[in-house]
Length: 245
Image 1 (cartoon, rainbow, N blue to C red):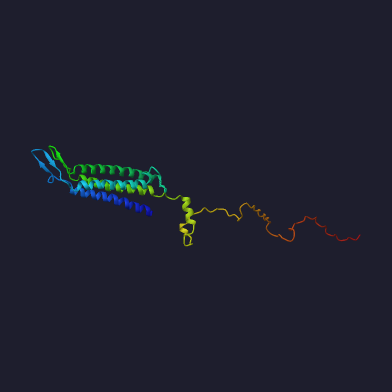
Image 2 (cartoon, rainbow, N blue to C red; image 1 turned 90 degrees about the vertical axis):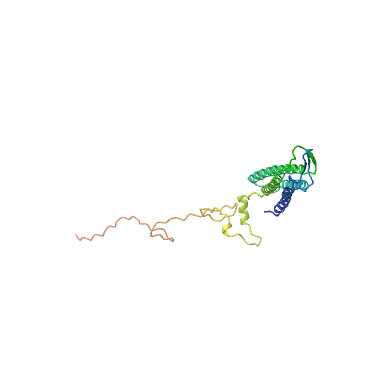
């Protein structure tokens, strides 16, 4: 993985983790029924100051910064292809993760804002002194973690480089290594070999065909003389003995 991707993922993760930690702390320090001063005669609800209404407003911008950094680094949530474009499948996954991360971040921001509103040090006149239920701000913290994880996943997918083409891989396998050595034969790409033998010839040069060797009959061929031939001859007459008269 690229060093830049690792560094930016760590930065986004730190911002998102800080937002989630503040959310968990705000959940532990939010107002409870024992903290509110209730006047049963006038219906007055006195909400005292507490750390929750200070922590939640800080968690919102931290989460927003994490989401903005991840979105800009990933090419505007995948709408613009980054310099090192990813494959089509990874790009689709990155866009889906980016959309889901923004949805989770928006829901977490709304919950944080509602938690701030119900933890302000104010006096309300109501027949019922309302409070936030248990685990309300914890939900926002968990959504912050989920949004951060999805944002990092989206950025990693959109920045991932596509797999090299087979031709490029074959060209890279034949090149020498930085130390000057060539890759072993197992790493080489198989090349088709011609089944018929042909004499080496230069490009653009015509090769004269070889002369045919004559086939000679079997037996009795002399390379210095002509072949033997049987000549037809008339039979000779035998001499007759002389007869005396």
